[in-house]
Image (cartoon, rainbow, N blue to C red; front, side):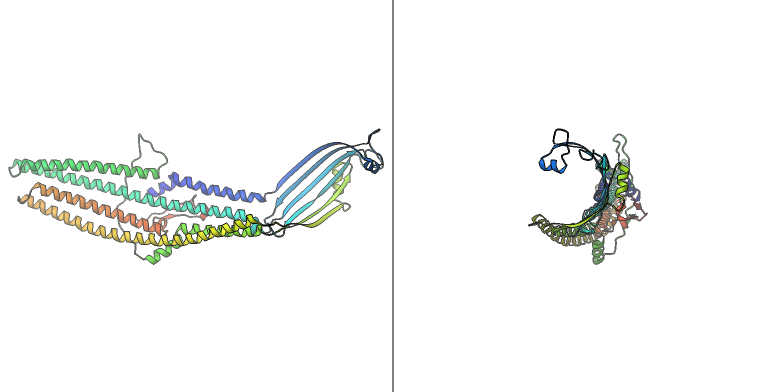
Length: 492
């Protein structure tokens, strides 16, 4: 059993496929955190402008313009770079550096112009801080928190699939043991019929048996050989079911052969329904997933409540302006105390109606109500599953006891009939019937034992302790549970 489980955890394609969902959710978390990554922005613009001046403009520039016309000419190169980002409390910041190289009809004349061309520069910090809508870590990190919750749900779903897969493997393993043991029962039955053929032939030669008794035994051998063929096919089918769960590849020309080494040694757990139910409510992953879904709804409700608020943003700028005849000197001048620039103010936006946000909040509350009801449904389902599993264990245990007594009685009857045959007071037909009764009874014992093992697996699955009982440990934080699993030796 331990080898089968270990192979499945290493090779089972279904588990690996589903583990990728967890990795996908990891990328979603990084995607959400990317909203807070800073951005470098660069802009370069060349301008060539010829602007006909009206009288007011012409007078304001002292009649400057192209000779014989009223054209004001400009040739500008505008450069801007910024490092922009956002903080988890909602603050949007921008570290800005601007430099404009200006050539125009006015500054070409020196004096009065100080520089030609002029380098007009600015270096500073611009901030926007939401005070109501979009304010705070809870609001800004809502998308990240939802992604983390989705990651937890993906991991919970993977662990649930792991438990179900392990349960399927355990049951398939027990079915394979049944098929192996049933083959042995069929072979022993054939051996008994063969012995009877030889004995009847000997008694026929001695004149104390009829030819029909020999033929009856020979027919029984053929019938039982047919049953053995069916049993061997049943073994092959169950072997392939287990191979599908344990292997990644299947060579149809040289398929792997599995032969279970375990035996059906039954250790029935002490029945305590209250303890089983308490364990299930602590360990069942469906319950944990529903609780996590409720937490997701709370995150979304708080976010949309914030979106109902008016937008009130505190905006501000702090920096310095510079003017020089070259690029470097312009920024040196901006760093001095001569061109300090600052501003502060509020930007207010008041939405009217807010129907979208109100609808989202109403929908989340309805979904939360669904989840609360679903939680109650899960509790009901768990209780019913526990009761059903316990009932199945009790029933199959009684079946094992009854079938075992029947098998013992059948073997005693066969022994008595064989003794009577030696004494000449019975015939081979009665012997064959007794042999068949023994084989049938032994198969029933085997079937009941396998069903009892399966019922115990169902109980462990129902109360959430299957992996623990099979010695499977997730030796790490839940976030990485699909990467490191150990299997410890336990009794089968």
